[in-house]
Image (cartoon, rainbow, N blue to C red; front, side):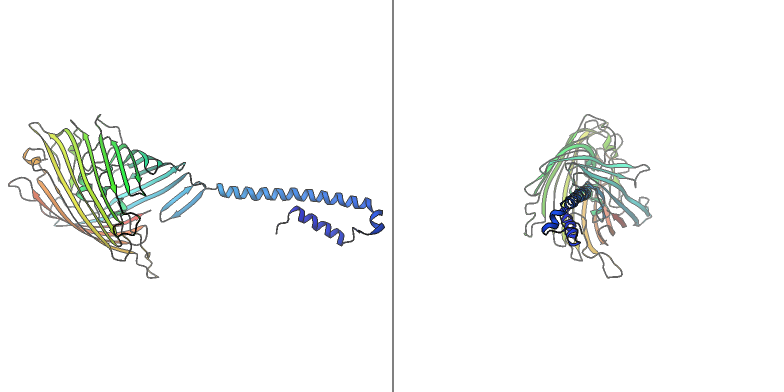
Length: 461
């Protein structure tokens, strides 16, 4: 119990009176006035000391409260490990993604196929915020290279929800599926739209934001420019040419109770002048089994404009999810003898259903019941199916623009997936992909069908 100075003063006085030290009657009081004054001085001295002690105690309590308010907040949970300032103005978070795949191909007498266990993604990541406005993201990749590769490295200034500026290396705002995080994919590999034709990450700057309660999302940016399916190196641009990108995505019923609340529609495109650029010679159109079926010839170079256009949409309602998009890549191209414009097309439609009843969505499924062998928790289960195809312009073959080993004009794939979300961080997934090919060269047989079964163990936080 804590006593104030006035309370202690009264207690002392009452004690003195009760003990007979003070008598307040008649002549005794008058005769002992000197003693009374001495006692009164003593009480005042004790009162002053007690007040000083009481103030020191109050200061200590105030300091403890202030220190607690100023202390950093440390958190560790399924969403990652973070430390932030007491006022929330500054924060830093450690995140990561680890995917271990086993790849099995049927019909492995084909030299293109190689059964293996592989690290698909090893991505330690640091994210943070300064002064409640400036976000930063540094994402690295260790799985595919002998040395660490920078996937993302950018700063985003959130001046207003509708006006933000982002600069550095990040995903080009084009393909809907490419913008989906690697941990949220429903299949082992992305479709032809986002993996083969849409650009991946590039160095650049963009203005972006959201309007009308996040119902309209826009991006407008300028980038160094990269080839189909490519990712920018971490060095300077080799040409003066730049690539422009723009995207708008609308969710008109978002936030309401309508059955269309999970509907989103978008349109995106890129355009750039890449005359004389030879980087597209490293273009590799790949199957879901990660095997290359088309490349340009070494003598082929860009001869002017390159553009892409992609309408896109998704729809989520309860356990059901649907994502679809189309993309056309057009490039002015030439070789030693001729020039032309090639148009390559790809599209996909993918659907999924969460068997255990959780809400579906663009991100990772969050199970209602975490896996717990002892108490009967089984996590969330999801099935998925997809059809996608890519068609190379026939003039790529008749004009000699394709690599001599590239004979496939069209690849068609259908996929089946089964995903088990044990909890918010751990997923076990398997997907089967069957791909058939159409030759683009008369007299050359179609390539053997690819049949691939991928299994994955994933940890993400």
